Length: 163
Picture (cartoon, rainbow, N blue to C red):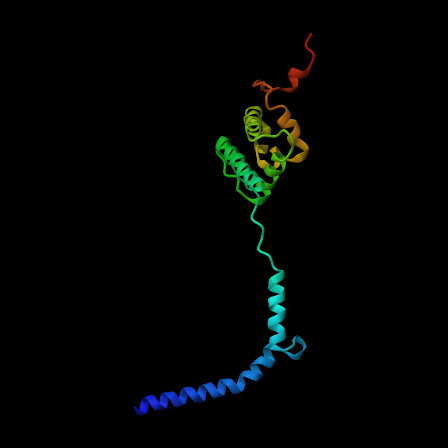
């Protein structure tokens, strides 16, 4: 029983000590220029009311993300490569998918055509998202998606006039 009384007395002493130091801790954490506790709480509540949760992505944005991922997955599968699903790659693809009259199926046709056209040539190393989906080049690649590919490599000799 004496042990229990001693423990209770020690807890009371500890509580009194902590309460006596409360003002010191309060002053350290909240200097006068920040106001009283009540003012700080009111300011925090006011600021919290202004905060809004982030808007969920729209259905169109979500669909665009899915389609960009699908296109990059298609490119990786066709090339047996592993281009990352990084924001850089996906943003390039999404930007092109936003263009008028561009479809996922059309982009896949364009990718297949560029692979056929550039495979086995010095251009093969450029079969990557940064080249295929660059704004300045994409429209030409996409416009030619339905054109046949000449499988015969062209050399300088083919361009010379033969008599």
